Image 1: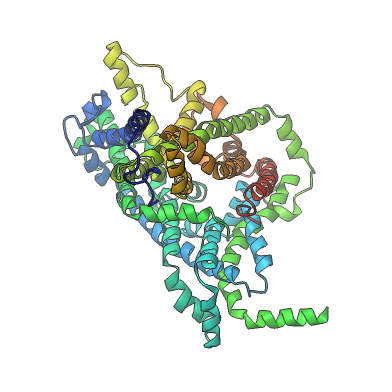
Image 2: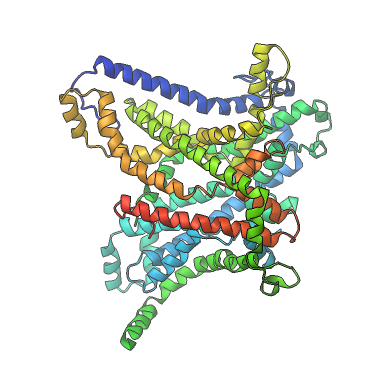
Amino acid sequence: MSRNKGGRPAGAIRDSREDKILYTAVTAVLIVFLLLVAYPLIYVVSSSFSSGTAVSTGQVFLWPVDFSLEGYKTVFAHKLIGAAYRNTLFYTSAGTAINVTITVMCAYPLARNDFPMRKFFSVFFLVVMFFSGGMIPTYMVVSNLKLTNTIWAMLLPGAISVYNMILVRTFLKNSIPQALLEVSQIDGCSDAKYFFHILLPLSKPVIAVITLYYAVGHWNAYFNAMMYLSDQELYPLQLILRQILVANQVNLNEMVDVEALVAKQGLADVLKYALIVVSTAPILCVYPFLQRFFMKGVMLGSVKG
Amino acid sequence: MRGRFITFGRKCRERWQLFLFLIPAAAVVLIFNYWPMLGAQIAFRDYQPRAGIWNSPWVGFKHFIKFFHSYQFERVLGNTLILSFYSLAASFPLSILMALAINLVRRTGFKKFVQTVSYMPYFISVVVLVGILNQVLSPVVGIYGGVYRLFCGSGYPPDILANAGTFRHLYVWSGIWQSLGWNTIIYLAALSSVDLELHEAAQLDGANRLKRVVYIDLPILLPTAAIMLILSVGSLMSVGFDKAYLMQNNANLSASEIISTYIYKTGMNNGTAQFSYATAIGLFNSAVNCCMLLVVNKLADKVGDGGYGLF
């Protein structure tokens, strides 16, 4: 996206009156759009820093009213949230590590033209994108394997996304010169050695992309946890969030601080806002720095290998 | 014939290390994707936990017929299709317009800023999105209630969260809020490949910027747009479970019950009693989906000159 001058040759013809109107109109539309996107986010952050009474009586519009940190204090004092946060960190890091390893390993043979069963395995993996056994049969498999209510239920089902695998395969096929393989084969390099010493270092960009995709997926996922976990100690953050934000179950007994019980309703609302911020901030803070990787992923995904 | 087998065998032996690389992925897919496909046969049986998948009695299409005749059939199928058509009809043209607009921005800084901010909501989880909706649009504590009281003094506005009539609008427009920016990426990429000379030539001929948007930028987007449209038609039946389930409440159920949420509820809330019935609904959905995807992929392959289809 380097040519972003809108097709305007440098110093050529001046903007006509119509053009000026167009540019102004576009800028205005985009500013309105930005406000629409950003306002709810700002509102959430402001509410999370307001007092319970201000929030529950609907006084917050833009900036925090009666600045206070009680929402955050309650979040950090909440028994389940801390554990859930740790669980999510674990599921995200371990899960992503498994995902990326399996995906890249799988993409490598399928990107090799001299792999004898390439056609068969390509179809083997593609079928999964088109057809699935469904929710209940999958649940039955997981429970037959005695994985329910263990951390493995969060890590193993869906350990490979075929879409991401194709992304990597496309990259390996299109961005790594075939000659490299031939040269190393002449030098007597085995297939495994070629993978670890030559392919992996060259694949860093695509590995970054799928790592981010998988990590965001794990961080935000709640479905597997809802299906397979019943033990609250194993719950990831999103499931606790669901209880509190959506099912509206703020169990005040779980708040350690007894004095906090006073402004019940207000506190419950501020708690929700603070919780939204605490659970989403890590991704939103990191994302602007990694934006180009995400965009690269979209671009890579649109080209066939 | 024998010779071919021998060369194939020799090739496999030469490339044995490559097979090792495939083992973990193949195992995962075999266990968690193919095994359930075998298990899906209980859609044609009356599943009894004690008899297991293989020994429960066959009942043919009983569960499918039961579903087609139940009052839920039209409701969940209709809700699913309306939701996905509405989403598509709203978000598809908007993302093209938005991409054209962002592409018109000449100040690089502002453009980057617009992109960064508008991609942000894409990374918010569904749970948090629905949580934000519930908070912000609550008639009691949210902006919605606050604004109402600002103009009407006191009292509470009508509840739009527990309301079947507003569910679809909330569902679709919160989705657009979340992904409109992100959806422009692919179009912006296509626009960045516009030949500058085209613009120069048009400009010399006296075409203003708006004309050039219509006659140069838009045509450049059309192939990409066609592919995106076709591909999204392929997933019309697979409205995600997550958001609809989270936005559901007793008051909006008549609009918010879609196929996947219905499967979950019948299957998971009744012990194992409804396993076969729920599996049958899932299988029906999967089969329709699969056909649509196959057709759509063929189409995309034709339109995109073989560049987009998966096969």
